[in-house]
Length: 231
Image (tube, rainbow, N blue to C red):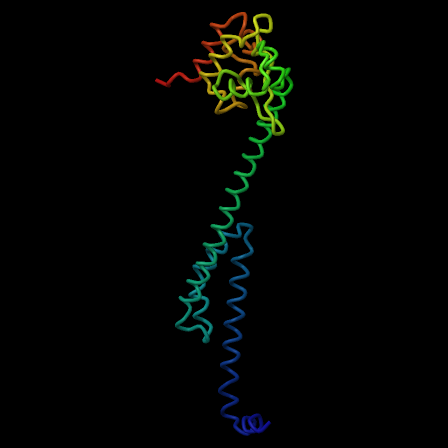
């Protein structure tokens, strides 16, 4: 209260302060109007960039910022650049997620196509090969690891496409065994299985699995075209 009364008794001090406050208030109003106008553009980043460029000049009109406007503008520019980088990263991340989603859809469709064909379990494989071994499951497992047989992992077990077997002769179809080795069935069972069950342009739309026994040379040529070096 004492300080207020002393100020009221000094008309010179009051008259000197009032114009300063009005000037500062007027400068702040101009600054607010200018920045609002700059940011009214639908291009948020473009308008913000322009506002940052204008910032030093606008801040110099406010006594509190005189001589320090460059520091404020630098901070604002850094914030703007950071936000732009975040936006760009978010856009890139969204495209990656979309691409992964498409890949997952394709993979799921390919797996369904593989599992739609007739499958044999390990014990049935041993029987198809005429084995009477006590550990029948080991027959299929050994041939799969060797690369002779294609087996796809499903729920902690392996299933073997039935087209691989010549039941009459009780052996693996020769062309199938050769192609399984060529394409790397042991390392990429789902990929090789997809090739076997998919329509093939080199076979005039036929599936390799359907003609491996009747036209083995053509099937082998189609498989070799995949692994042949380019150039």
